[in-house]
Amino acid sequence: MIKNNIVKIVIIILFCFAFLSKTYYSISSPSAVVICEDTGRILYDKNANEVRPMASLTKLMTAIIFVENCKMDESIDVDEKACFIGGSEVGLRPNTKITAKDLLYGMLLPSGNDAATQIALHLSGSVENFAKLMNIRAKEMGLKDTHFVTPHGLDNDNHYTTAYEMAIISKYARQYKEIRNAVETKYASIQINNNEKQLKNTNALLWDYPYATGMKTGFTDNAGRCLSASSTKDNLNLIAIILGSNSSQERFNDAKEVLEETYNKYKYYDLSKFTNIYINIPIIKGDKNEYERTYIDSLYEALTEGEYANIYIKQDIIKEIIAPMNKGDVLGKITISTNDYVIYTKDIVLDCDIKKKKPNDYMLEILTHLLDNTERI
Image 1 (cartoon, rainbow, N blue to C red):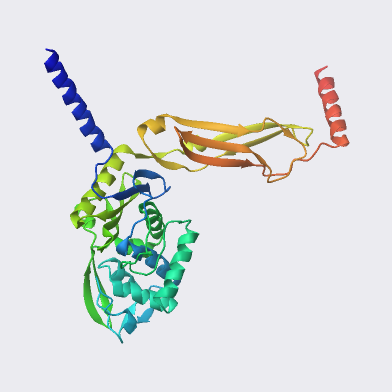
Image 2 (cartoon, rainbow, N blue to C red):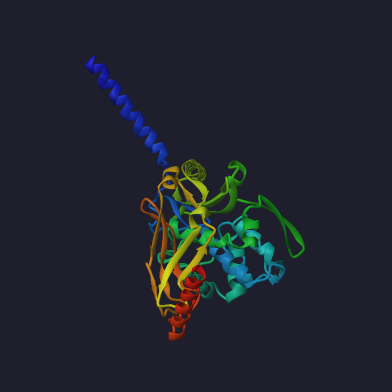
C-alpha cells in the first residue's frame, strides 16, 4: 500500500512538472521575448537581454529610416555598389530604376541584401554613413545594447542587439503603415526597370498561424535562425522575437508556442473605469472654497486574470490647498498597479491659479452670512 502511494505521488509530481513546463513555454531557441505591442510590456522573457547577432531582422531598422526619409513613389537609380552583395537578393542590377515602395518590398519580403544596401546608398551615400544614422535612431529609441554596422545584417562582430531591444524596434516599425502593409503581404509583384518580378514573403507564419500580421525573418551562420513575429488575437497585439534557433522550423514553432501561450495567459482589458477619478480638495485662505475636478483617461493593458482581480488604485493627493498656488503646481499622483506591476501613473496638476483671499473677500463673506441669517429670521 505504501509503495503504491509513493508511485502515485511520483506520478503527480511528474505531471505537475510537465504542466508547469507547458505553462511557462518550453521552447528550444536560446533567446526570446514577447511584448504587448500597444504598451511595450514584457509578457514572456527567455534571456531577452542577452546580446546576440540578429541577421536580417536588421532590415526593420533600415525600413524605419527609409520610410521616414523617402516618399514611396520616388524613382531610384540602382547603384552598382548595391548589386551582387551576397546572401539573399531581390536581383537589382546596375543602370536600372526601381520605386521606393518596390525597393521596400524587395527588402522585407525576400529579404534582399541588395535592396537594403541600395536604401543605404540612396539616403546616405555609403553603408558606413547609413550605419551612423541607424545607431543614432537606436539611441533615440532608448536602446543601449544595440549596434549596427550594415543595413542588411550580414555577420559582423560589432553588429548586435537583444531580443527585447529588437522587439522595441519591431514595435516602432509597426507604427508605419508602409511597413505594416509590406510585412503582412504574402506575395507581391514589383517592377525593376519595367521588368516584373514576383516576390514571396519568407515569413512562414503568414501561412501557418492564423493570427500572424507579419514582420521579418533572418539567418546568418553566426546569428542562426531569427524571427520577428507580430500577431493579433482578441484585440491583443503581440510581438515575439526569436533569436538563435537551430533551424527555420524551430524558430516558427517556438514563435507560435510563445504567442499561443501568451494569449492563453493574458487578456487585453479595458481599464478606463479605473481612471475615472474625482477629486475635491478644500482651499484654505483662497478666493474659492474648494478645487473640484474629474479626470477620465483611456487605459488598456494586457493582464492575467489574477492581475486584473488585484488591481489597486492609490491616490496620493494633498489634503488641502493653502492659497496662493499657481497653475501647473503638482497636487499629487494617481497610481494604478497590480501585484508588483505599475500599470498607470498620473500627476494631478493644478489647471488654474488659486489666489489668496483679499480683505474685501472677508468683508463680503461676513455680509453674505449676515444677510442669510436675517432672511431666516
